[in-house]
Image (cartoon, rainbow, N blue to C red; front, side, top):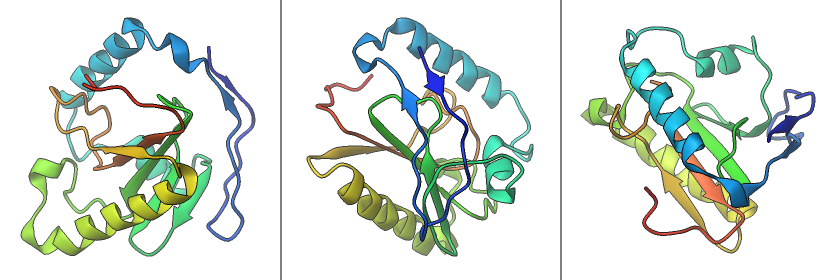
Length: 161
């Protein structure tokens, strides 16, 4: 169902796109069940464990970068759940594995991430978008590094889950 072509690392000054083809009309329960299974497995891991996002940030793994600044890193999801699916993460995790663990001294960072997500979404999804934060096992969080999903490019449904 997913056809990915070679990815390249890009920067905010040289935007690129990851070419992925996926039939979004057939998002079935298997995709949901797989994500729940990944979330259950991830919840059992030590939160200090290196994540896929650490590998992307370090450059060990390539990513299709949409936006980057001193605090935020946004890139296209390799398993998109909508025609536009971008993740925004803080560059430094600093204990921010889940939103529930956010500290008062991280309020500026959290606001910055939301503002950056809005700016990216405005460009990528001019007709509208959804920003999602999955938190914990029951929230189907599969990577324990806080991240915002930007979803758009089609009419989204309600309720979402």
